[in-house]
Length: 162
Picture: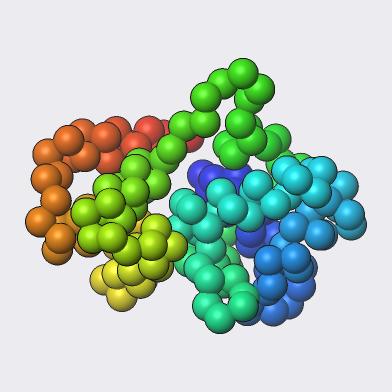
């Protein structure tokens, strides 16, 4: 089953008929036109999608990092927000990719955004999952990967059982 975030992204791009959208062309329809989210929640969703590697920034626009034509959008689809909205009182939890990006950034002194773009590029070029690409990039910087293997494996299998 497709993740809710991918369904939302596919819906927005199919609806627009464009290959690339500005950030505002993603969050404004979610909040103002569709009424699915508040403006803040919609902006959080776009940030979440970029952080998860579902959207890639190219120039001033965002493009999906997966083939949207393969995503099935259920009739009457309305998102639940569970996947990306942080609950009040809960400490924000970084995704595995965010943790790996942070570690690479600390070691190399590079901006986290640049590191994420490198990971996304590797994932696209090698046609591998973003989590695996993050490990690949971390290996190129000689970072210890042992602590990430189990976490990435759990994340991948947990994600595929939904």
